[in-house]
Length: 289
Length: 273
Image (cartoon, rainbow over all chains, first blue to last red; front, side):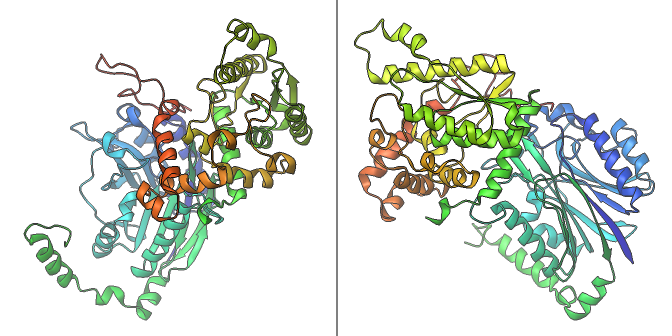
């Protein structure tokens, strides 16, 4: 089975949901016209990233009758959509979320589990922590969503892998940093290398949609990528520039790679569970020392 | 030190995008740069010309009566090389209006007055030319506090503030800033023979290596000494970083209400754009 992907590497207007929604609909239209099956927008694609005190004013509930979701769901009749947004839950907590929309329905919402609150990041001050990492079924097989810092913790993709995901849908709004003599920023190198590593280790497709543009002095570097289950690069979007990048995934590659490299078959889940239980139950320590 | 080597193509592209973004999102299309004849303002001018188009950049030369002819000539070389618009507005009269009232005025006070006069000229041209003032302060001088608050440190946005002097020189060469400007001893040119390195007591090449370890690599002062820097030099630099922090932050506002600008009224400047 083949799946046509579109990576929507966009700039956003900070805190202007209507303008960003319009851009989403335009990109969805373009991707649909090219015959894409699935379009993936970056983290917080409807709002922009450094929201700070804007969070409560730009947050939306993930509901079919919400005016923003209504339009996106209408656009999801023929093409599946991953969209990033600030989510407000029924008890008025705010999350960094990504929703998977398909055929007019909200199939899954992932709430960012790891909120970086160090260095230049301050997410934990403005957002609530998500509390679940779960795979879900799509028209193309089982998938899972992680948002930026989520996939810097190996346990998150591991959980998705164990939950049956073969398509890892990663979204980011990654501020570029680490200017060295190399042709890419350190952040770009780090992110690309772990995406490639996950593809190889989990013998799965790893799809990463990152944004571009500036927010004050922060610069988002783009360079969205797709790696196949062999860890081979399928496509890479340009650095720095807004782009709609297409590629086709051959899902049969999962069969071929896993026939060669049965890492999933040999995974000792009971051992992991037993050892983790032992480690976490040990008196006075949660980190092994 | 390898850590101070930069990919100048990447820097150029990111900083060009930054200048375009910050200018257009504020509702402008043009920029104003004060050209001193030194390498920092030359780099800001080259970057702004590349990002916005030469015709959209106004370079302003602002000599005081003691400024060297060489500074003016070097600034002219940048104007010629970039093709930007230019004007020369001497600040002698406006600065001396104040300086002449205090016959015993120190060089420090005079220097600050000159830097602030230039700021007034640039912000006046900002309104006249409908362009934003591009900053020219580099990371080394920001960390060392080697600038005049509300003077040369004033700008609408600053593309150079995260580049050490050593890195800025690399970028200058890549941009095609005339060699003589890149190679000459940096100076505030407030009096004859003044150089930054003479005043600071160490070279940019030395201090950039130390600052890179202290700031970027988070070395402790003791670890810097272990890495081969003299204890006295490390102490002087560490003290300067702390002492001049006030120049790097907005003036603190005394909190009284439930919501106060700077503490819990937090928005980026790009809010809504």
